Length: 558
Image 1 (cartoon, rainbow, N blue to C red):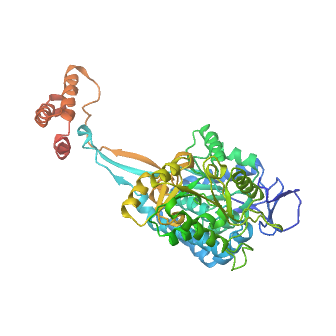
Image 2: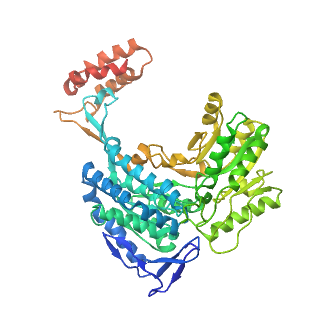
Image 3: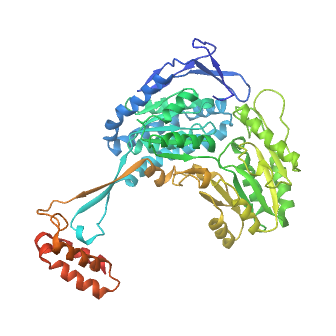
């Protein structure tokens, strides 16, 4: 469990205790109480009770038991729930943003910007586009012999889906998975991160009040061994995990033991390439925001910069000036730009990465020292004189540190940007349309943006996910919706009589199949045409075939 909280005895009463949501009701956990703690002050927040293995199993049973009924609902019914949830979030947005600031640590304004607004936009988009995206599609058979059959592709629910979400965006990330899963007709068990479970439970409460039937969405608080058992539960038909690469690999291995498909949105070491012709003011402003948003705890943060040496001095000066101007402090203070890190252990990783870089010759332009006092604060830090021998340029830091490396050319910048096992997002900064096209083409990432960074997570039509070690599958947009459904091919034939390929075979059928090969695949049109005539007037085809009904399909052969 996360280091920012404290496990108490079963009867702990230090603060109000919130319970999991199972089958539409609150369920008090039997595995003790976990005390949430403010990452900015260390003060206790509400506690939440932990479900034991049997109780977590009740949540899975609830999702499985309600799956058939929810799958049978219409798109209009599902849309009504999403619209009602959105209305509730609009009315309660300020309270939800305050909860995010208190438990996770991002400033209230940033909670609105990066959590509440993206959640609302995503709910609206899924509600409006879901039916069209998931609607059955008629498809014409491409094979001449079956051209008389009717066929379509339907998109059907998986059933119970397990969604495991991280602590860095504890509201907007769950919303994207939940909305897509529900619109596609699945039921859900949500397992929020331990450090931000209060936010996950508040989100579950919103959907309950939006009219979801009991069991369609269950939110569980549990310790790690119980969570691991959930991943291996064969009743789940799909697992959606957002988190670190090592944990994602364990999730994938565990789900594979049951043959359960997974969607994984994992970490990144996202590069920015600053070209000599870039608008340096825009590049510096955008990269500073992209690096220090949410105290750098964003999988799509700018975690390394490659700048052409001709403009490096001017660019670095602007970055340092802007980083120094960031106001770090209490996330409840409206004047604060950057709050604390959410976890003490995450700050320790940041400290270790900076110290490794310092020891290997990096220069600290600003920041780099852990402040005293309560909370998990770490200042905006800019490093120069860095290279790929340093951990800070290879491993995900997930904190407010921006290393900048000078390069001789864009060629070198692209090579170094791609020299990583990660591939979530990348950005290029240039005023040239030709260079923009090259960066879009050659940077290896699931998302590439020019002259901006990070923002695409908030665009609901943008497929979200990475390549290489950064993940499998996509959330957001049409691909994200389709990722929550299984394609089902449905074919119908209401004609009478048998098919030409049914038993018995015999010499006539053998000759017919040899002719079919020439009909469908001979390299010359005249050969195919003559073979088609012979096939169509063979005794077997005249007896069993549907020539008049498939005449239009003969055009596909020529």
